[in-house]
Length: 261
Picture 1 (cartoon, helix red, strand yellow):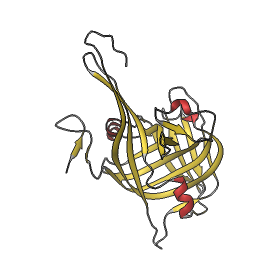
Picture 2: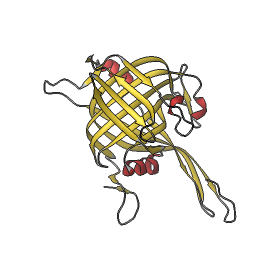
Picture 3: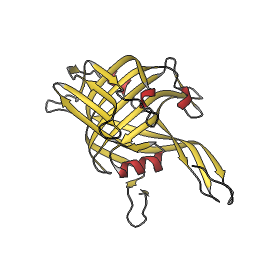
């Protein structure tokens, strides 16, 4: 077993089995898919391209337990294709409520995680996922009325099984060191949980995605909704594993250079 660890060396913030990655159980979340209004191609790294029209999604999840501990997460997602036309999902913005999840995501996968307030709540028959940063300043709200069961076919469109995820990892350099800028491919596998009757816990119904506050510091609103395609409330288990580095740019900073980060 190869163990991936963070720092401090004698008390790492996170630790995981490289083969199994980070494992989650007892999770629940809301996810909505839509066509994106406006041009978002400028936020994509080299080698990835959006469809026409651009397809986006947002996920707000409560991870009841994981090998990193329990935490909440908000993820903005763009459907992309690489230079060979193979499909994938790129993550331009992602937020969590836990420092271990933030450090592991940034250091291992390059996921651009920030800390925020995140919640998934049932409000009068509607499941609402919220992202706020700082607390009390709502940036995004995803609402789904779980009024009917979601078919497996539509579920696979919202959460395509086996589709690789992409993040852009950037490691700035100090004098005499090397800056690293690279595209990392990783994997997210979901297993929908079942209720006491043996049916999978995935529901759909009327839904909305709103951005109550738009800020330059946290521009999640750039994935603006043009046409809603579908939404779901799901309960699930999950596994995240590292894939490969697609490309890597390294630049050495001279010892006497002025470094900007």
